[in-house]
Length: 387
Image 1 (cartoon, one colour):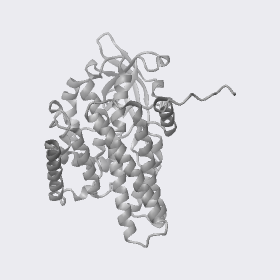
Image 2 (tube, helix red, strand yellow; image 1 turned 90 degrees about the horizontal axis):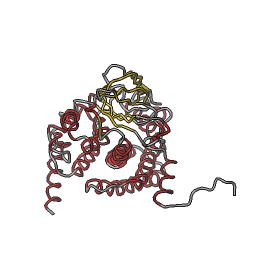
Image 3 (cartoon, one colour; image 1 turned 45 degrees about the horizontal axis):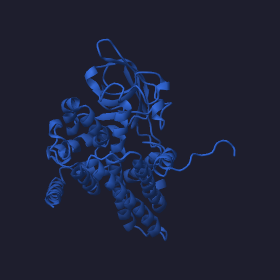
Image 4 (cartoon, helix red, strand yellow; image 1 turned 30 degrees about the vertical axis):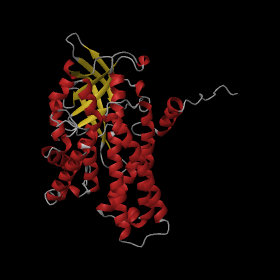
């Protein structure tokens, strides 16, 4: 009961602080027209959240946190989104990669994480490659250890979020051959301004260059940047993916809920179509299912319990809910959505385009179906022998 009362008090204090800073932060509620501006706004909001202690809840004190439960931080970012602020891009990445670094490389986390928590550094995640997307074990980027203990990196990563702007990348590479699959992998924290690293932006359908290709040519990374231990990269990656399906999914849920809230406000200013209620209702039900499921996952993660293959359910619910909300906006605001040249309309279109990828990034929908069938439902394998 005491913990519940303390959480309620913290959340009340956050609401009061956010209201008091409404004028100061008003420009951060205005959608940014390009990625660089969005990241500057993200950094400013991260600084404000950090200085108030709001996003430090749940992080250990040795990395600049305040301790306590990470569930407090999750509730804070949800309230932030519902108040009309975009969840900082810096935080979207950090909530995925940060917990794994704290767990598997505490000294490295103590040294490097505080700056990222303040928003003064932007981090990225280097997993996907041209020939290794959903099949992550097929990655080809090599990390060869030298006699002095440092690593030499050669290879390519693709679809790296904020890759053209980030300061560091949490990189998964292999020490052996591709045939080793899950074995012999290593996770490293790499400075993206180091020699031998080239970045090429990738434009989304909206034109925003939010993604990038990252090329490594004899890039040297210190032995002190290993996350976990050499050869344990796969287990570190699987641990990290729990937070991509937990905390990250929660933040995407909060953002999609904010979109639905904005849609309802927009519909209130016009004559709603006859199919508005069922369309909005279905989007709301999808979000409610996602929220309930993700909340359960977060509680298990906060208690230190492994969640494993069950997070594939979270991933499927996330893509379904996010796409349902943006499909509702496209259906119910057809004139604004398709024809208007206002900033607001442009951002509805941007959100819709981005939601198309929700069933691919973080593990394709079809792969999640297979995981659920094989590992959770224990269904028999498909008969490919023609009988």
